[in-house]
Image 1 (cartoon, rainbow, N blue to C red):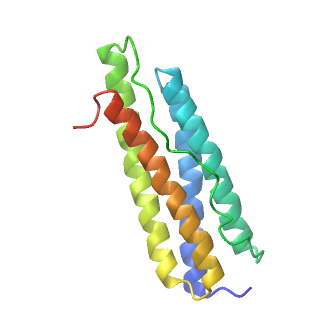
Image 2: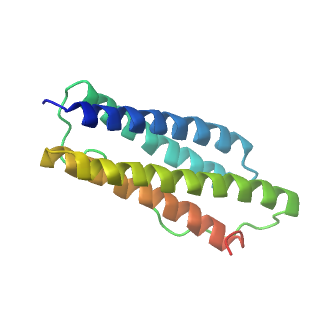
Length: 151
């Protein structure tokens, strides 16, 4: 599997972004006030680890399985939290807003890369990861909406 210089550069950027996501979700799961949100952040972190591994494999010349970027992530509905103090809610809202912004950015990086890759199997893998990134954003949005954090 031969990658162009541009493809390698795009993957290196994505790799950096995926590591940042892992770091953020690790910290955010520790700082979140409610267990449900901690669980969401931990679930997303595990998916981001899978994405990082896939991107690293591609950079190392290993051809991943088509659709191998998808982690089976479920963006299902979340429940409204009970007894949410205003201080805890504001803290969690900040974490969610930043996480949602990060997911939008990372999804955009994948979008650009999909258009730049010459090999259809790699575009398919990147497309699968992008879909998972969109599901992460959906899950965060659902949590925010259920808890009155998204206007």
